[in-house]
Image (cartoon, rainbow, N blue to C red):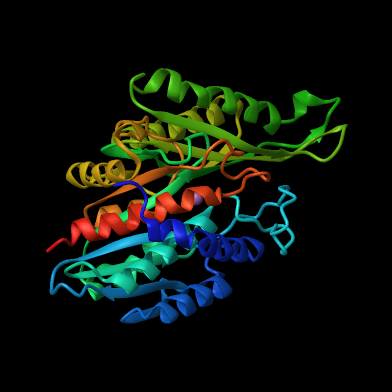
Length: 387
Ligand code: NI
């Protein structure tokens, strides 16, 4: 079965919703207008129930099939944008300076709305579909907040599925893998306290910039020398702040960055080694180094059976040759990980074609891909709930 005719017919309407959302991006949990737009549409479509305010600003629409009782599955999209100044020059570009849908969550939301409209019209399944729209995917853990608010129990959700667009993957292609598909993330901050002084009298100081430079170098050895080379680990120092003058050695420096892993044991080794390096370098230079390490999103782990199921659904839409069933994991993080910890399910990528990358100011969701995304959601629901 190729894309659904009805989904192709809806493509214009979905693009209109998507462009409306694109023009009006909102950040984090502050997705009030977006959530109201989503809830309004779900009401118009005739969902049996529309629940707002779950996980602060999340929205859930409930659609029951006309073929009798059955299980409930959850289909999830994210609604939040990024603090980026848009550079697409598109007529529907962001009307809010410094905010932009640069990860395609506008497209994810519009596609799931399209699927909800179709499913509410046809209801050709047994059981129930919960369409889940979460806030704060880009940091903040909106999905986690929805789970803490009882998302799974309240609607009796048995399985959950997520989808994200992927620039560089052709339109009409899908990509997935069983097991870890996206990384666990952690953030660290290193505060170095040395002794400031005159730049021309360095021997009377404890220079936090020199110490910080040693730290940046030494931290590279965590990946290179402390963990198995076949395991995946990223340690990136992304901030280094110190000093205000040409002739002053500052008193303090602050470094920060991110750690990405696919296995908890690798994350544990990384944290231990980073702590030991801080202690060692502090001792050898006579400085104090404060080390803060905060684990953030867990690994996005695709369940084996649901991954095969999702790939089979994608193949029914796109053809087997356009479904990549064993891609490399990505070291980016994803809040859908919490939903996959709570229930079995799978996260799949949808080709966005030859566009700028995610989180780039020139990125734009590709409206041509929506018919594939909507068809995938519909086919997935109708197959999982065939009765
Ligand atoms: Ni995203």
